[in-house]
Amino acid sequence: MTEQAHPLVEVRLPGAGDIDRVLGSGADAVGIGHEGCLHKARHAGALVPFVRHAHEAGLAASVVVPVAWPRSAAAVATFAHDAAAAGADTLVVNDWATALECRPYADRLVLGRGLTASRPLAVAEEPTGTAEPVHSDLDVGIQDAVGDGAALGVELDAATPPRPETLCGQLRLVVGPRLRALSRSCPTLRHRHGTAGRCEALCTTPITVTATSRWRLVDGKRETLPAGTPARDLLVWGNAVLDPASTTPDRVAAPVRVWVIDLRYVAGELAEEVSALRTPMTPPPSPTCRLDPVSAQPSPNPLRSST
Amino acid sequence: MMLLNAPVRSLRMLDLQRRAGAEEVFLGLQPPPATGMSLDSLPVIRDGQPTQVGSVSMLTALIREAHQHGMRANFCADAPVVPAAVLPAWLDHVRTAVDAGADAIVVGSLGAATRAGTVVSGTTCTLTAGSMMAVAAPPLIDLLTRQLGVRRIAVPQHLTLDELRTVRGQVEVELEVHVQTGSGWDCTRCSLPDQPGVGLACRAGYRTDAGWVDAGAGPGLLDGGLDCALCDLPALMQLGVDVVTIAGRESPNLRQNAKVTQIYRRALDGLRAGRTMPEIIADIDRVELSWQMAWIPRLCDQRRCRFRDSPISAAFV
Image (cartoon, rainbow over all chains, first blue to last red; front, side, top):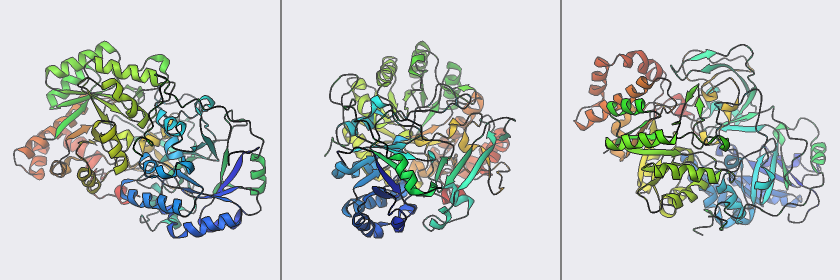
């Protein structure tokens, strides 16, 4: 994956058994897992056959390791180690505790949307009009880790790529709905009256929601949204909220190493979507984030410090 | 002894919170205009209310006043993201607070945590890992406390009592628990509030494509808020929690916010005097009009119990 004339395309699958849907599409890699929920990535027993099947088909294999919520932190760590032992080519981790667990796998470690979707809070309460951020602002901790080689790269929503000058390492962009939020208290479980751990079937279809009322801080009551408020549709999928209106920009200034397509959102022919993303890439710039911008000293790297 | 930490953004608010029984305060400072982002975990304005102190001189005055009354001042610099371009401004922000006499700096990102030590080094000011860092798993606890010198951890809002007990057993560090405005969501990763006009979107009401509509006063479809920990103060004390933090830097009603502090104060004092929570609540009910008018309908009736079984906690993944 080091010398390439065009970006690679990875197809993220709903489940480990869906590899055959990708064969012949021109994709370079397949992935399984979810940023927010281990229940949707409970493929520990299927990890070895998934990786083997992918490799036999000539595809690289990625595993998304979910956020380590307190109850599942140990299971998430085990899942990450199992994925590495199974031979996964890329491990996408979504919280710092799991990233620390995965330090031995630095050469295949990617910091996923659970880490990169964090964003600074505005000076105003909320944006005016329909303004949306066009870039993601990465925390210096992420730059430290990637800049020092303790992680291979970062994965972000294609709708909000990083500013090119802040990028180092491999850039992976996820096409499709932008990740808006992850919840420990799963809204799908609550709405569909499920039980945590026995809930995979509840996540086969998303729930589309639209705001109708706003919450008043002063008394904790909800009031109807004023007429004309541009409330947008949101997708609730499992314990994640996504924004289906977000779009991939026509041109991404930063060099994309891997495009990620989530098969759940592919409406047309997968092969056409794969082909469309394989435009030639510009050479990546020299990393600019290896030095602490304040002191010009090597930046502290929390993932490296205790190895 | 478990302490009460209360929000402050003005001298009047400090006075109200002090009289209500707070022993610590936490406060933020408006960022320089050129920064373009809040340097802590709240937007500069929320629901039309300022969330931060407006000037360095006011910050200094508030910290001095707090110290005169024996109160610790915790400075919030807990932005969930500190981009490299903003890092110099963030470090200046923290230096300003240290110079103003802040007793602790609350950080919200790992990048910030790795840098803040250089500012507080050689001072009496300490570091707190804010709830924005969602610290609960051993590798991160170990990194923060043993290598980065963090002295206090504010645990995430979605931690259960059992999980809190586990954290307590793992590390000798001050533990802080936020109460009264919780969230089943991970606020660090959330951009739901970016919907114009909808306000705090996790607490908004929604309709679904199947025609279901959030109705009534209870939690809505996206609302994972577990707020009140009053009935579980005995358990928190037994666990060795060091600080209970009342939310509300953005509060639109300063007296109401201080009333919450006062009720927690009554409960803590009552427990220390050997009374039970039912006795304490009966006492509160006798003297506090807000108990029946606000607390019960807004919290008890909606089962917004921070540490009790509820539909919200039953859906924890």
